[in-house]
Amino acid sequence: MKQKEKDDLFASHLPGLLTYHQTMLSDPVRNKLLYKAIKQHVNGTTSFLDIGAGTGVWAILAAKLGAKRVVAVEIEEALIPMIFKHAQENGVANKIEIIHGRSDDVKIRGKFDVIVSELFGSAAFGENTVRSFIDLRDRFLAPGGVLIPQSLKMFAAPVYLKRFNENVPAGLPLKSDFVRSLKLNYPSNLPFGEHDDVKFLAKPHLLTDLEFTTVKEPPPLDARTASWKLKNVGKANAIVAFNHSVFADDVLMNGFESQSWGSTVYEFVPFEKGAGEIFFNLAVSEAGGNWSIGLKDRPEVPVQNYSPVFAFARTRMAQQVTPHRKFKSKDPIKK
Image (cartoon, rainbow, N blue to C red):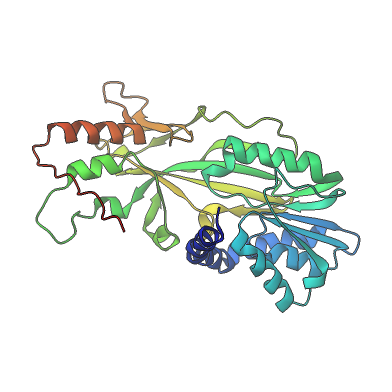
């Protein structure tokens, strides 16, 4: 890759990185809980490794807490100078070793008493993420060392989502059922500002439990299922999935309460009113996976099945039968 291409890539990543990390830096729930966990385990004899260091806050805090050795590893090139400048501002630039690279590839001497590696959303349970975590644990964690997070759990619950019932297109006397039916095949992230518009209809159910200190293989991604008995299944129009992370023995973060840990929404067409038991099956893959929602005690009611593959197939089929004229673009002018 030529230098100009590298500079263009660097520049294109910068706005998104700044926005993303500003969101995390502005998240008091996540920040206070992670700091509490780190503070419990770091002292003057601690060696500390931050994998996926971002802007370097945890490495900086470890250095300020007196850790004898601090290493920050980050794959994103544009974040490397931010770690250094951030450390400089806080008077610990000379106490942190910064490494640009992937955790799977880097070679670091010695073992570490504490390893921090933040995991977010459903991707945290993906095969590549879990294998990377197992690798860094086996290569870099000292005997008796501490992993942060220690474990990660995914929960799901049926909810009433206010935005589902809003008219689209907004303010227009038109229908858009076809577009909406396609959109249901894609899960979405729930913005933190919309949490007040979500009403839980049942207690969250555990979908996946991952113990990072002992896990040897990624968990199966086709065996996530849950069900809930509701007084009125007609109120539910979405399933919300979110993580709980144990940073330390007594430090638990509910991802639904954090603005930087995303909650995933699986919207669906509401069932007819009445008591019943609603079920949710989820299989995740790199292609987007698939999920289904149905009623356990009403087998006559069709199960709703969703997947990005279905949206693609329906759009392609509709394209083939749509009367339209197509113009080929002229060849670009050669300079």
